[in-house]
Structure formats: structure tokens, C-alpha cells
Image (tube, rainbow, N blue to C red; front, side, top):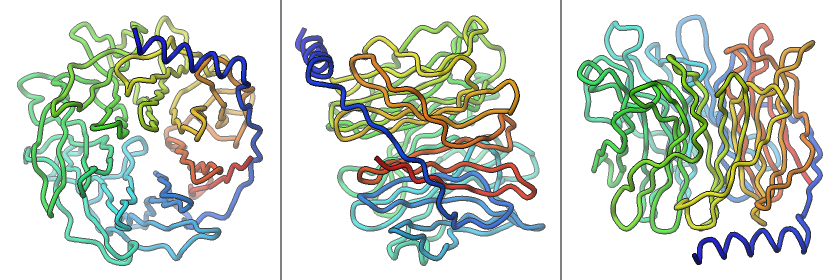
Length: 391
């Protein structure tokens, strides 16, 4: 009952005290990435913005990073070799840590099988200048798929990682959702938190008071692939819960994962569904650390292709990004302010793009009062573009 009262009071405040509607100015800024670059990821730490991306040459792939502090720092190499597994949807990531360090993850091939690869991680204590010896995040050593990882900082030093794991695929014919924590130079506490999930949709995580919130696309025995979440609270994992019963039945993975953003007990999730042959993007709010969610709010403009991301602002408003198909010009990247009372501002077009796989998955982050959006421009060669979005 108290959770319901809290939600009603929040909605009341937004309705009668004003929704704080926010207009945005979109400005494209220089990108630190060179030609033939893609798979960008951004994460803010205060007013700093860290970006990671992959640049490819004729014989190898290089994972790089740089920081924005009014201008981009000199790009630094995280890892470079001929065995990086490069996939438009399963991108590496970078995580700024509160102690000033960095953590990063990427995928690395294992053996000769085309889809056999591991999730590798490394840390840096000198702003990305040097990186530790790479460590595999998972125990499973089989030549199978391990990917779609998401990182979050631990509250007691270190970081935790959640990923999709095919170690038991031969027995179960399903990927599982697995979690582990990195402390004192090694991974510990590996736990399977859902034994049957969608094969290749992105996962996402966010810190909540006393624990972690993990969101992902689930998979039932009869191929319903809706969005579920689990929480680590009171020292244990909760059973998976579905945010909304979209009832999207699809025999193959749509490669279109959800996203989450949180600030204390306030949690918001955005996702894409193609249920009933009606593509939609939704968002839902929680005021109790993700224990329960409000009714979903439709976000899209009528013909989305998904690839969503979400960022929470200081006042509890969220900004959702997604890709919207256009009849005459491919697709564009849009953002929209969404409020806990269910209202939203008109969408803003950030950039034109295409829904081809080569355009990747746009990512957003908030640094202070500004947003940063990164995406792949499908030129020849493809390259990363960056927009700064300010009030």
C-alpha cells in the first residue's frame, strides 16, 4: 500500500506542480574515433564522459577509449589483437569507477568455431593509459557464445558483470543469464540467475539501494520473448518478473534488448516489442527500487525499429532514445522526455541514420545537465559520430 501511495504522490506532484518540461539543443561535436570505427559506448562520471569504441584495420581490431572534458582526450588503446570478436549488436563497454579507475569488457574469439568467444575484462588505474592483463569473466571454457555483458560498480570496491552464457546450451538448448563479481583481481560468486533467456539481446544493469537491478529479454518454452528483470536485494536474487506481458511470440532472437536507469529507489526501464506485428517502444517507472512498476508509457512515433537506451535526469524525468523508421529516408535517432505521470514531450530528432545492422546501437549518457549520444554513421568507411544535447 505504501508503495502505491508513494507512486500516486509522485504523479500528483508532476501533474500539479509542473512536469519540468525540458527543451534540448542538439549539437554534433567532433568524434575521437577515426574512420572504420563502430560499436561505441558511453558512460558518464560526474561531468566527464568516457567513450569506448572499436577501430578496424585490414588485419586487426583495436578497442580504444577517450574522455570528454570540454574536449576529447587523446585516444588510448585498451586492447589490440587479431582475435577480437566484432559484432554490431554485442558491443564492448567502459565503466568509470568512483576511485578514479576504469573497467572495460570486450569479446575475444575462442578456437575455430565462428560463434565461440569469451567475455574478457581489464582495469586501468591511470585513466586508460595502461590496462591490466585481460581476465575471462566466466568459468565456462567451452567453445560457445558468451556475450551481451553489462557492468556495474560494486558498492564495496570492484565491479560486477552480467552476461549471456551458452555453456549449457547442448543440454538445455538455451542461453542463461549469469552474474559474477570482480574483487581483488579475480571473479567470484558466479551465479546463474535465469536458465533460459533470449539468445542475443542486450542486457542492462543499474545500482539500486543495497543491490543490483538487471533487465533482459526472457524466453519461455513456447517462445514468448518479453522483458524480465531480477534484483539482488537482501543478499539474494529475486525470481524473474516480467515488466509487461507483451506476449511477443517470435521463433528467433530479435536482437533488441532493454535499457535501465536508476537513481536511488527510482528506476525506469525502456524496451522494444514487436508483439501482434505492431512495433512499439515503451517505458515504465518504479519508485520502490524495481519491486513494482507503473503502467507502461508508449514512446515511439508509430514505426520504431527499437535499439533503445534510457537516462534518468535529476528530477526523475527520463530521456528515452530509440530508432524510428522513415518511409523515404531510412531511419532516424530520436529522444523524448518522459515523466512519471505518463506524459511526455514531443520527440526530438538527433540524427538521420539507417536501420541496417551496420548502424549499430545508439547509446546515451548524462553528464551534469547535458546528454551525449553516440552512434555509427554508415559512410564508407563507417565512423562514430557524437552529439552533445544541452538544455
